[in-house]
Length: 557
Image (tube, rainbow, N blue to C red; front, side, top):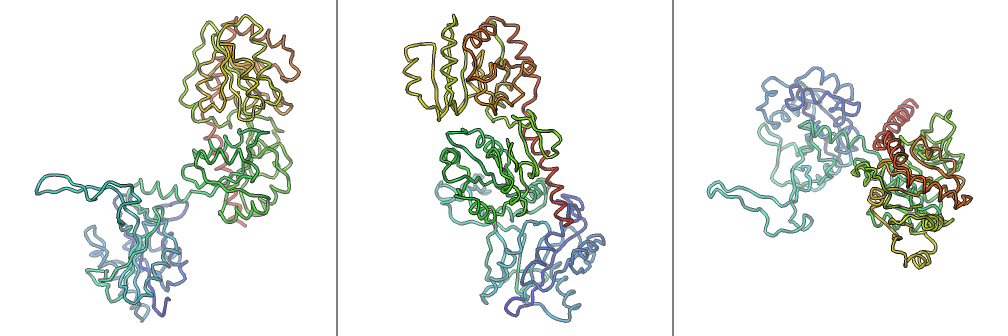
């Protein structure tokens, strides 16, 4: 009841729907379509009674199962030609006879609008606090540059005055059909609208009205949408590989709401997200982090911050979050729901851990690069040791190559965190063979154009592998040394820890590859035997299965 007004919600649900046969009974995310409107009406703080008017016994059964009363609709009111006005009027009269009372406000709530919220329904009802309001309908913003047709003059003409952006067009609304609320005195067999009409604007999500299969698909994706918080790190010490991975992941999660969470001191991460226009919030400590997670309504928390602590992951679990970690060798990983690690092998007895190349997220730019064609001669070498090169392996490799008879081009890519870029440029600026680049956005082009690549033992291996360019690998630290993918059987020449590598060995391996076309071709073919284009699908397949189990266990508890 609202302000002493008795409120009746009428849900019209015919059995003979044409566009999608039996749609009111079909399961939409594991529930009958009609159940959504019933639940919304029952969740309202103002609605007194909910009635479903139907000509179908099975719909009647389901409606009662979900807590609505039912009135039967006559054959005359169940044909395709009949409008809703007489149907709603009939349901109101029948329900009032059963209740021995009259209602004050009659609300039509369509079962084909499953995304309407109880809060929206209550907003509609609250409009009747103004006694001058006769009827209220739900609408959605419909501003766009539209055209119409003049039949008399056989021409098309714009309905707008000036071509401006959508935001600057005059307000225009479209009825969603979800809600039509009217004072009882205006409910007749041929009309449900009074003279003074108000509106409640709803979001595009709530405006979805299921008439076609495309609408069903859209509604289902909205219902499957999750709030995903990505806790990421990027700084001069670890580079950007963690945030790059999460950005790649977020770019493919188009139907989910993603929020990045970053420590206040992670300026490199902040700069990256500012440039890409992703939503993010910063936090100072874990208390603030958990406050943000709660405010955001996070359901899934993705951690890409390297090793996690037991206390942090257990606290996430205690707060009911589904936890996904990447590249985590910390003690917290054993408590996460899922851990993915394409780089470092784990104890495979851990059922929550998934390792290997199958779970590598290839950056978008590599999807449209064709495989490299191996040529007889090596004319272009690429040196790329990633964002961080504290050991200055870059300079070590350049000097080693220049000490040989190789006279081709040497492309050098250094990261934002390279410590002595000016010194590097100064050292080689007089050598026409050496070209130095920083902040490269199209690294795939450099890799594709190279005939041979020097790289570190990190995610770049998989990028190189996806194109099939022969590569010599130098690990930058002990952690990289634990990565097992970089071996000759997979198409890589692994020279171990770069710091302890003798320059003569490096020169010999380089010369061997430059002079042996068959060896380079063999390495190329081994690389291309790996399918690196399904990482996202492999990751989401695991997460979806685990998340279903997670939700089911919550349901049981």
